[in-house]
Image (tube, rainbow, N blue to C red; front, side):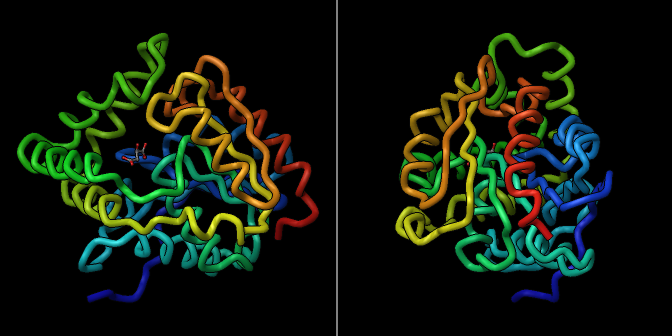
Length: 264
Ligand code: MLT
């Protein structure tokens, strides 16, 4: 059963063509604060939202859990703000949602950044690990899950400040919202077959130290798209925008400027 989609909670700074940021798992829109500043200083309207069940957005009543609930919340926000074709930046989970959005509604995406993500469905091993993580979240909460994930998502040289920021962001998420995301990601569709049909200009980014979605994965994703290039972010892991906020922001600003006149 699915109820009408509500406009999600969001932050908005600056004026100009719109750049919309989609967060990773199990975090929220606060992970983009550095990039919102960079984009607004470069003359863009920068927005970050919370997917349903994360941050300040209530969980969607969508059964079974499906990433389409997140896609609908993105579209609801674009409609509320009268944004037609923004640049959409999605990292990992955010990238899954961005890819699904562009595959279903290519007319609503002016340009795309896919960071530290991939187009495939979960492998059998990944699906089994979702079930283990689900039980961890239900018994011990999202804080226990992020502590397990930390060595995989941040670079070994991440600052104490970055580590504690990621832990506290995950700890404030509701177990229900995180559980919904785990199931929705476990059962998500494989988008590899639709990649050659996507003509939206795309920048594929990967932290050069990302071991979950490696630079090779993002390079290959970029090659499968019609108009795409790949850029590696030095010294960054999976959460590349948190490991290397300035460099990540510079790459987005450069790309957004290339397509400035096409973003509405
Ligand atoms: C993320 O960073 O959003 C996660 O790695 C996505 C996932 O668990 O597949």
